[in-house]
Image 1 (cartoon, rainbow, N blue to C red):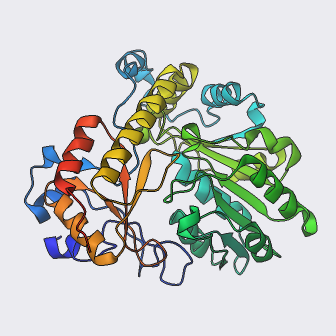
Image 2 (cartoon, one colour):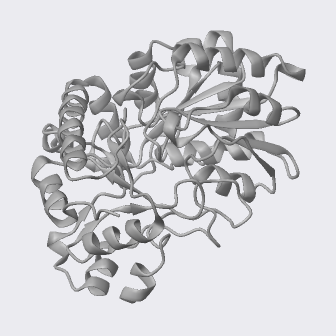
Length: 385
């Protein structure tokens, strides 16, 4: 992969949805992020100096990780994982105060989103997405040969809020509604009461309305979870992950929470053994000892505000965020592309957003103060028009 192939296209480091999909991306195909090795070759940087500001992962792992691994059942690695994931499921259930029959585990939140699409979407069925939002929803919908209907969010000046009326209209006759809160990549969250009102309006549709998949990957950073509302909404699925607050993106563990009847439907689609024995062990230990996650969130939130203030002082437009990332408004695509190129040539990888309402924005993960200061120095003062 050449420097031109990585650096010249504004969407080259962003996951791309199909061209006809309604998303913040709208590229020609689906692409994962470029690897550290590809970036090092393309931009002539030391791989050891590369810092990922594009993946929204935690800048640190739990300090107990080595102890958890030391007690892991290594003698069982010749066998497949327990397909029931009983211990992990029990830990999740205890964490949220729900019965184990409400839990479905998977290899990261993305596998649970994939399972939901496979379970709930039929060829030609309707899926609704409120854009701009996470680019996987259009991809998964198109993979099921579903018809994707867009319910555009409100204006940038208002924080890209959900347009509840537009979403309810779009959901008429739909099988599935994708809902991301806090929303990626805008970094915003909806008022809890507004979400409950929206769920009530959707549930009034024929047959109880569409299944609503609420992706709460960033919930630990802000807002109230919809898990407490599951008793009222039998067609609600809440998806969570250990990749963000828990600092365990590499083990690939996520889970869905739903009423038992809907959870049972999802569980039928889950492939056996998709979470490794070691990943399940680590995740179970992390959920039983959530002190790190709480401390990690507090540290990231504090650094997020310092990072944002420094960017604002340098002249960049940075709306408030309730997540572990910041959305930077560069005003125009050329300025965003130039800033991204400047960062990449120093081994600092931003998220560039493809065609759509966020073209001309960059998304930056909040990392350690030292790493964030490297980015601030490289980004410099925003060019004045």
